[in-house]
Amino acid sequence: MSVDLEIVLIGAASPQWGFTLMRDIIVVLSEDADLAGRRPVLVLEDIDEVNLEKAHRLAEMVAARTGDRVRIQSTTDQREAIAGADFVVTSLAVGSLEAMQADLEIPYQYGIYQPVGDTVSIGGAIRTARNTPALLSIARDIEQHAAPGAWLLNLSNPLSTLTRAVTRETSINAVGLCHELYGGLATLSSWLGFDYGSWRETLEIGVLGINHCSWIQRLRVEGEDALPTLRSYIEERGIEAESRRLYDSETPELRHQNVKMILFLRHGVWPYSGDRHNAEFFAEFVNRDTNLGADYGVMLTTIQSRLVDWRGFAREAINQRLAGSAEIDLRVSEEASSRIIRAMMLDRPFYDVSNLPYLPCRGERLPGVPEGAVIESMCSYDGNGAHPVAVEPLPDRLQEHLALHAGIIEDVVEASISGERQLMIRALERDPLLQNMERDRIPEMWDRLAAENREWIHPGLLRGPR
Figure 1 (cartoon, rainbow, N blue to C red):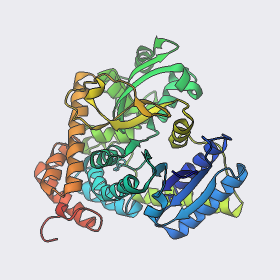
Figure 2 (cartoon, rainbow, N blue to C red):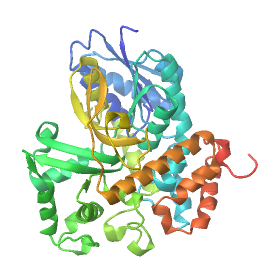
Figure 3 (cartoon, rainbow, N blue to C red):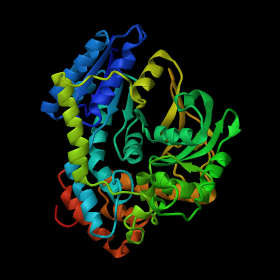
Figure 4 (tube, helix red, strand yellow):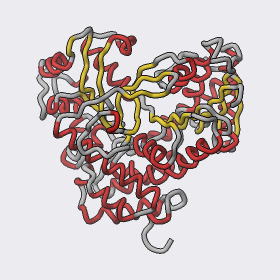
């Protein structure tokens, strides 16, 4: 094993995520004088040579401001980057935002409106098919060329399906990481009055679900059950299980929490992801009858706004940092990958949310959920790896909903790998959001999307001569 501690960031040229992830890794790993006697090396990898060079320069500027304790390398060669790696962090999207345009616009023509379109339903399925070959290529390079016991920390969406593809097809250590819980807890802290900054130390919390549709089952603040208090907070504002159009109510400030509050009042557990994500797992929230989701405060995010506002803003920020006209902020974000790396290297326990395979041999019993399905739950990390906290089933109707989506994900992963077009279509026919269209047109919609993605997906997923 190399004397160096090697961390690889794949997708380092991403304008939205590259700087945040590499800055966090450099700053966090610079805080400890001794990382088990090994000097950290951060290897930046991306196929975009121009923006990778910018990322490298930025990383060196961050390293210089933190004592040059982390060495920076960069390459466009994936296998070269992974050789000898201890940790590989992935944040990528094959085809980038341009490829995603069809994911949103073709389903729109069939009456399927996706606020996000990167996780579940038709958008998640085509994105899985597009990204799975890339993630499996990375995982197999880790299996063959990384250091023994190396970890893959995956931040790429669809998080559950891509992480599942890796854990199913390879023997490497892999976990999916997402930040949605943090925003959910920040909201609850303002409503319930607890200190968000110390939630890991002060809250007793239990979560279960699929990434972007996970539920807080247990929330105790200073030993007291906070879910009844949360229900009172909502009901005191006149919100009921069928409330909608909060933008016209006495509580317009809660309009973007509408979906979460309805689901909580119905089921008694809190869905902490943003409403734009949660709504895509159900049929009722975003359709023609709800003003394409606006009745529930759910907005459709277009590719145009993502390109101009999201990507454009991120590119501008990068250029300003490189030019010295904007400060390089050294504050570590809430993304967990850097802290997980430190926890594993220094055997310092770190508590966070994770996406790992469901293994009934641990004593858990989740009715209807296939063994190996990647579920979201709380987890403790230390020098021996990742240790998911035991979970209990959700309330019956939600447990059935969880099992439905877990089963669909299994088939979407299988179809993406094997190229079984009919299996993909059967999976989509069970999807709740697609109940808003004519069922017999699902194959036609899939075939149009597959044709748009022919250069990236398994040829078996295409209809007709290939």
